[in-house]
Amino acid sequence: MRKAVIFVIVLLIGLAAGAALEALAAVRTYQVTGPVLEVRPDAVVVQKGTEKWEIAKDSSTKVTGDLKVGARVTVMYRMSAAEVTVTPPAKGK
Image (tube, rainbow, N blue to C red; front, side):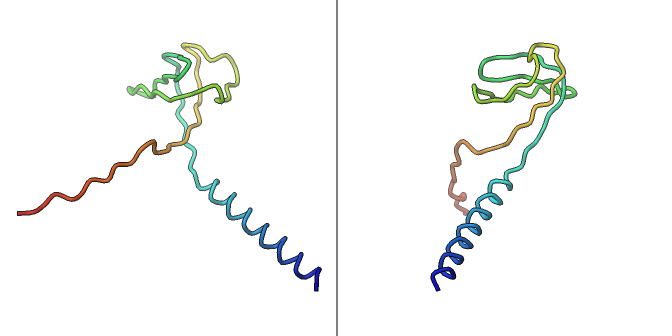
């Protein structure tokens, strides 16, 4: 009986861990590729076609190679909301 209880507990922990990993995997990762226009401690600016993409970075950002102006890079990033403000619908006449 005791082994069955332990088995059920381990099974439930495994299911909970699996659900947590699946939720984390649901966050999409995007990429932008192009030449670097500017490098700052808080961001990197990449030219993509005619657009300039400014992507935030910090000390935890993994950089492989020499990140400098003119280098061709592929930046992997995720989008996350910093703030959400819900406004009430406009009143009709």
